[in-house]
Length: 63
Image (cartoon, rainbow, N blue to C red; front, side, top):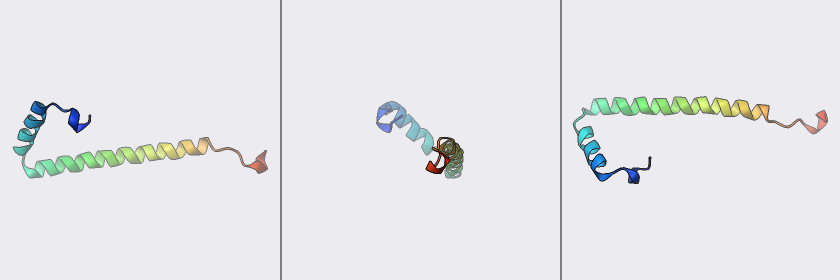
């Protein structure tokens, strides 16, 4: 969801709520989120690499 699509009241409530959370908890959450994103990217790169191999055209020598 684009940030400009979030209602003003929801944004203000979120900022207030986040402001009450200890910085250690926030940093742990951010690191967890980044780890999840990186793991997902790695998983998708493996899929993309595998699919490229299966769609390769035979060389002209094989024809």
